[in-house]
Image 1 (cartoon, one colour):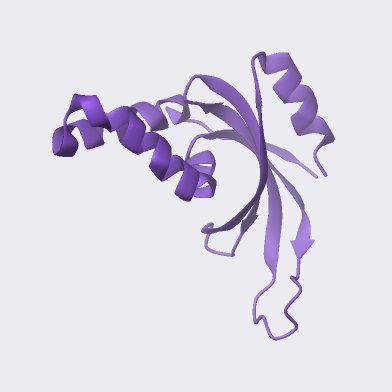
Image 2 (cartoon, rainbow, N blue to C red):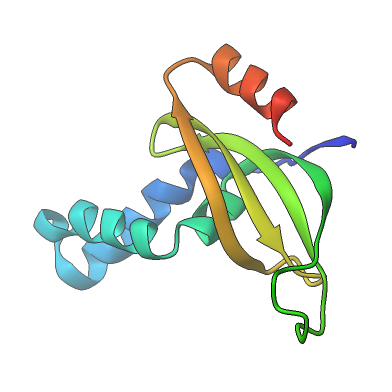
Length: 119
């Protein structure tokens, strides 16, 4: 299992979402709507905000008729001002299929420790 560092402005994903919603719905509603979107599509947002990732193994699912195997991937980063570690199911095209779990941390050291122990 190899850690992969992801470059870019991943920590600005939430701010960009809020900014886009302000344009459409105004500043009073933007942050609340952003949180609703994150709740509904959390896996995609954690994937886009990742700073590092680690392959955990294949997930073949419970459905024997499922055609493709998915990868279980741990990702870590900062989203909405908080450190997080999430475990996602990702297909061969890097599209998130499911968010299996996410934990938030106040300190980066605690998030780094949780990322290292993700399985």
